[in-house]
Length: 277
Image (cartoon, rainbow, N blue to C red):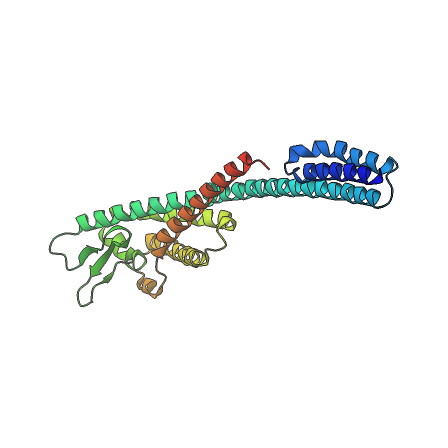
């Protein structure tokens, strides 16, 4: 008789074990209470000895597995929530970088480049035939620059800092364009001072070129103001500050990198928001 009871209990245990092992989805947790309760009933119904111990062990195992599944779901949910929160903060900062620093930076640089191209073209057109001074545009795109050749001097790159007095004396009508270049440069310098904290910290090379630009702009403005008062200033050649031509390329590189990075994060956020754990 005892053997028959043991056989029945073993059969029931096999059935219960198979049911517990099949509980792999979160929705199955709601059945655990009933199954665990059943185990408790069997354990407390007078089944003693080895069968009671086995039932208690299965009950504990079922509870541990349910706890593990709940912990896993909670961890994944926390990871997703934290990721989305961090992403939101990062996107806000990168949007500020693009809209408040890099965007205006690019616009002002483009404006300076347009004004400088206009000045070069007007200067070339104003140079009278037969003049001992020769001007020539060399290179293309951002590499284009003007070369000046004076009597008894080798050709060299035209630097407005060096030739400001020459322009004021020979082509005074061009000084209005020079004034626009200086004024726009002041706007850019003011922008860099106010919003420089949004510079990408990885962009050390760009930071160095910005420092050079600020020094160049300060000298250019000083020369412009002094030339308007006195055209005879031979000491301007002592200034060696040169406009950093790499600045344009570096700002475009950073802007493109941040824009692409922001796009990737936006795509990732959309994927996370649709994920089901």
